Image (cartoon, rainbow, N blue to C red; front, side, top):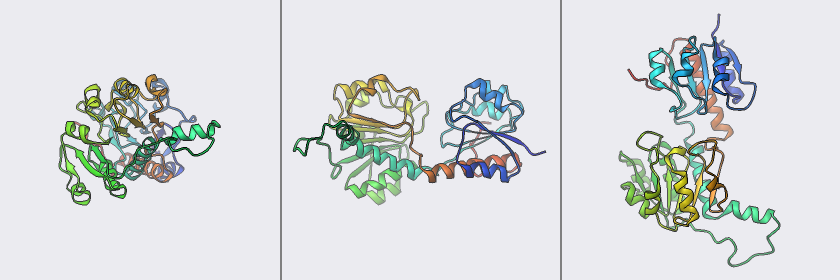
Length: 322
């Protein structure tokens, strides 16, 4: 009898087709929302496979209640929502979807950067509110990108893609990363820098680090005070990398010029201090939200889940502790 799998939220149809074509019996969350822990357990009982999302808590308490589960494929690059130690103990294989969302997330980074620098959401609200009465020399003055310094914190795939696009805007690039990025240096003349120097020199500081114990709270009050008053902070990495209370204070007191955020410290909750400010652009975690990327992610997760359940290694295994 073919294995049963559960998909924790509706995903692009090609992802579901990859599961069905493998002969798996597929059940999908009938509602487009995050399931509670109890609901997820109930749906996953008797299932051998789970295709989950970053918003699902695949912790030890959950895994203890679904003894039939053999494989978990997360439709995300990050996998800090999965207890890898518990999965290893129970012999559960885990896969993710790396690399596939690089360009979409890099493009959204630039969308945020341009939006906050040129005050686009603020100007759009002004016009739609009927306040536009004609051109004025002081109307919504923003900041140019040409000749400015872009600081990239975390020069992995996405950080590199963001840096490579900076050449089109005539920007200088500096980056902070534990490893040298020769490609970025060669193609953009980027300079490696310690985080303190990067924050002090950057006109735009863009965050692209994974969430680890070292990066949690990486940008707090001290770091924000090192930035120029004319500088902007962009975060499309993980919300908990930034202390939102400190950021709200820095924006309110105009210690920095502005910020663009796609992720939040206690997502989906957004610090209320940010919601009332005009100098921050807030997006609902849409970094990879293109038809092309989400479809590729769904297919990748589906194919890897099918492979694991068939006893084959997935193309994108998450290394488990031994």
